Structures are given as C-alpha cells and as structure tokens.
Image (cartoon, rainbow, N blue to C red; front, side):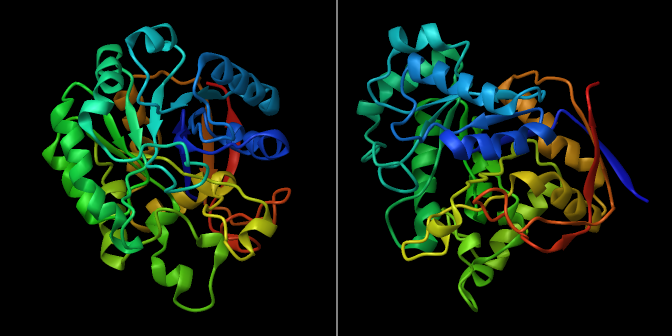
Amino acid sequence: MTELLLHEPLDMHLHLRDGEMLRTVAPLSAHSFSGALIMPNLIPPITDAESLRAYRQRILEAIGDEIFEPYMTLFFKAEYDLDFLAPLAEEVTAIKLYPAGITTNSEGGVSGFDLETLSPALEAMSKLGIPLCIHGESSGFVMDREKEFVPVYEALADAFPDLAIVMEHITTAESLEALERHPNLFATITLHHLLITLDDVAGGMLQPHLFCKPIAKRPEDREALLRAALEAHPKVMFGSDSAPHPRHTKEAPGCAAGVFTAPIALPVLAELFAQHDKLENLQHFVSNNAQRIYDITPPKKKVRLTDTPMKVPERYGEVVPMFAGEEIGWSIAEVSEE
C-alpha cells in the first residue's frame, strides 16, 4: 500500500454558497482541508465589513467542530479606498475581481478595465498588502476569452508592481507564460482543468456536470497546466473552484457553470500525482506555495491518503460531484490534528 501524508492542505478558490447549500458543502471541505479562500459572489455579494463578518460566522456554524479557516474575500468595487479597506485589512485575505456578467453572480463586476478608475482601490490594496484575485476572461469567443485577457493581467501587473495578482483557475498555456514575465503574477489551477478538455465536456454526449467557466480548453493547454502542477511551480497553487449547483440547474437548459470536486479533490490529486511519480510535489501544490504567496499560517491538520479505492457517492445532498458513482484509486484514510 502506498500512502501520503499532507500537512495543512489548502483550497485557494472555493465556492460555499449560502443557506442549505452552505450547510451541505462546507463540512465536506472543512473535513479534509485546513483552510480555503472563500469566494464572495453571493446574492448580494460580499462588499462590506458587516456582510463579510456575517458570512464568515455562517461558515463557522456550518462546519461545526472541524478544524478549518475560512479565508475571506470581498467582491471588488472600484470605490474601495484606503479609508474603507484599512480597518478590514486583518479580516480580508484577498479581493476578487469579476468582469461584469462573465460567470455566476458576477453582474455587479467591472465593466471595462480603465486603470484610472481602478487605481484608487488597487493602490490601497498595494499599500495594505491585500492580493487581487481575478476571474480573467474577456467577452469574446469562448475558447479565446482567457487568452484575450492576458494583456489585462500584464497591464495591471506593470501598473501596480507591489500588488500580488492571482490569475484564478487558469486554463491556457498563455496564462502560464505570463507568470514568467511578471514577478507579481501568480495562479490557481483546478482539479478538473488538470484532467479534462473541451472534448470531455461536449465531444460526445454533453456532460453538464463538467461544464464550467472558464471552459476546459485544448489537450496542449491541459498538458501545460499538468506540467506546472506536477513540478510544483512556485507561483502556482491549488484552487478547486469547486462550485456546487443543485442537480436540476445543471441538467437543464441554461446549464449552470461549475464542477463540484471538493469532497474528492485530495484523493484524485494524489492518484494523479502518483501516476506521474510526483507524489513528493503535491504538498507544495496544495499548501506550501499558497502559504508563501498569501503569507498565511493555516490551522494544523494532517491528512493521510492511501491508494485504497473508493466509490464516489452519486450525490451530496442535491449536488452531483465529479466522478459520481465511479471508483477512484485513492481515498482519505485519516484526518488528525498535528
């Protein structure tokens, strides 16, 4: 039997939703992860101290006794300034910028990327050391949206060199190349983008539970992402973008975008890294890099995984996970405090 011990695994891009959905999915992440960066695109979005603190409290209530730190984010608004952000600096791990209407609950996002308009907020974030996370897609042809957004990343990186900018859930080789050109650019990579291409989503019968934004790309993009993850690229970290939706909104016209991977993320990552003889690098991909990039110290937690197969449940509540009903090759054997 092969086993792997992970210390303080982190998910640096997680959707927990709210209400009954929060109560269903939050314990699943809190069981196996030491912490996660929580996305703010609720209805209404998290844009102030009151809503941020209230949401954090609802998360803590949902996870019960699990050892888990919800790293909170604000939904980016151009009107944020130093006076507004300074009192929140210790409570806000990052601020998430969405182009308006580009993904789930992003209608209140940014329209256009005029640096003069964005400067007060971004300068304040630079001074306070609050990273900027971006869902980086244009409104162009769906397969080109991320590639078309790379110049925006680069313009922001040049204009605000002291601002850490995280390119969220990257899907293209072009995004990886941008990392090498700018010291203040970083990236998260999801589990599903390490495994699938557009062909898996729509090459045969449509697979709604694999439909996400940004959409899965070409085999060569997947291979580039996989190389970066397997080699524990120091500027890349795991962010599941696990995005739960009720089954009836996925298996429907106007299919909701999102892949639910939170409960099986660590076992599938262990299986993937083991297949490539890179198990020794998984600790960096799922924890060490994120701790350094975000300057965080997560709660102590040990997760022991083994190459013992497990069958993935058909559903968690109303949510269908990736690999539903299938057998995966690894499983979590034990979770404990250090």
